[in-house]
Length: 487
Ligand SMILES: [Zn+2]
Image (cartoon, rainbow, N blue to C red):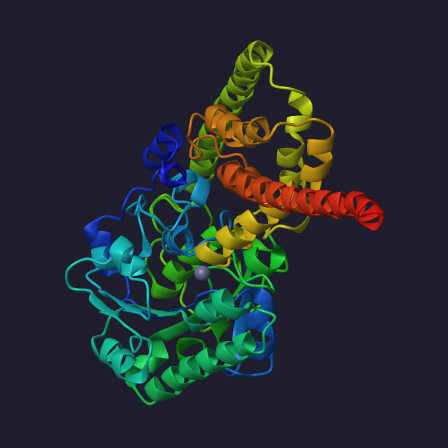
């Protein structure tokens, strides 16, 4: 799984090669002073959870709603990188919550270049700050970081960009799922916090140059969990409040869903800085109200974006084709080797011995925790559910397999086949051979098949022996009874 954080080197090189020219310093000096943006990230609050309370007025009037797709995997740390750089997960190679530093130019870089600073208010994980903060930025962490006091301090610090990262809804989503009433209640509570921030700065003269953007990195499936392509998870909305600089504004918002890579250029446009230099989307095209000054264009006039998109798409396509070819070739080679080894090793009824493994996998696919990362609410629950369901599948067919002559040892040994084939197929490298959201989940999960089958087959065999023993005892007793009568 850690290999998912490794980028395709050629794709990343194409991105860096085609970056925009940074604006010349004298041009930057001529530009108007920076506006301010408060970027509220409601972690784990998808479009379906955010829009109903927002449309009911939970944060006051709204100037624009832009609906986006998070990109995949829809995990937090990769999501933050997308929101700040405009570079999607498969290009940056940041696809897990494990490791990896920022790999592209960011909103923070654009603000710093103009002499501005960024404030990172992080309720739990420190990943935004880890990725993008530099000296001179305010970085606050802890359960109170999203609250009034810290926010007021950040606003008073005149940071041009303030990231308010609220994680309560994500925590509730993982604990009880999005279908539980606690989850929408927590979303409401977080929107109340945002509203209190908006109200608190309203009297300040700085409020008139402040834009409020509220959105999320991903949502949660009803039972809890994210990472996959499910609409509840991957469909997110970003809302521009009709407050501060946008008070009274009502933009014509795009009807189509945009990639999440549009958020960084949008925030940059509101700040009045060029888009991050490697962003792969333009800002959403909103009908601008007459009072808004035009944002400074990148020196290339934005046209270089098209060349960059093309170069990165070509590199990505080439890398993917090569990786997929490698997967096909290695899978065929591995299967041939296994076939030859299999013909040398002749346990009794080889195919029947595969039955518990096949049944375990079938039951996992039908009734397991899920076949995308969204199945993982958290690791312990996923592990327990996955092993239990695999064990149940193996246990259910074991009496039949045993009756047809499968040996216990062969059945357990053969359950190692799925993870072996999975590992060899991608050379233990999920990153460059990114095979889509389902394969990315199922290949590593195959490692749970041997413990699942082991537990299931041993348990079923234990039960079978006890039942057989009891049956034999009963039969023996039945045989002895007539004798006893004779005596
Ligand atoms: Zn989460």
